[in-house]
Image 1 (cartoon, rainbow, N blue to C red):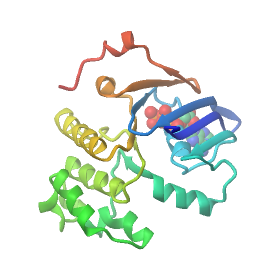
Image 2: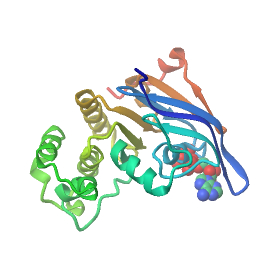
Image 3: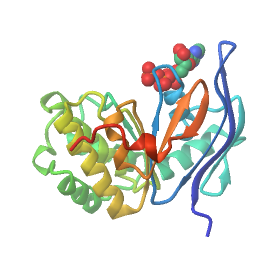
Image 4: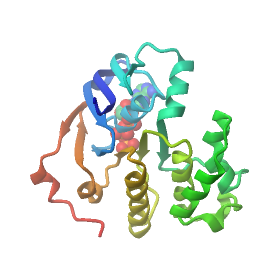
Length: 231
Ligand SMILES: Nc1ncnc2c1ncn2[C@@H]1O[C@H](COP(=O)(O)OP(=O)(O)OP(=O)(O)O)[C@@H](O)[C@H]1O
């Protein structure tokens, strides 16, 4: 069985006359964990947006779960995105006037199907059951990110894409949030793709890819051993 969940080939992205991604190819398999690192401005968020079907490349192909979405309509892309991808952002992106529970349920509500049992399971796993009725303004950064992770997992996606998920958290809270992400990944067998320039995260992932100057390369195991662990 082909394990590839996301397969991108020759992604080219031009913005304002500049090539931001220059022929990037990447395969994300089921039940894998991938860290994408790179200097500021190297195109990490641009790649995140393309892999998450939030943006289209100028050229290149993207196959998601066997479907070539390169030429798909926005409507089709939105459906595949909703069914396949869960997003976690650095700035949480919770809706201020919804409670934690309502925020986490947003993807289910978009699909028209609430699964209260799964939400219970997620809130329990993320240890936020007691926060369910609170609004984002009353939550700490780590609590907000745990609610955002519940939201990302609400529709049981095949892949979680996280863009600097620990960027606004102190090191201890960042380590806890990472632990929770990996714990949930182990339970669900989803793929986990994290974009971060935090080198301390590197030793937790199956593989580390470096995006630099629009090109993606695999980091060698020798390089992997140098960054200090979060623990
Ligand atoms: N819509 C756009 N139009 C023109 N240039 C853009 C556009 N979007 C991004 N860029 C440029 O593309 C480059 C890559 O941006 P991107 O946000 O993907 O980098 P990044 O690696 O995520 O950076 P950081 O780590 O600082 O968040 C930057 O030079 C940015 O200014």
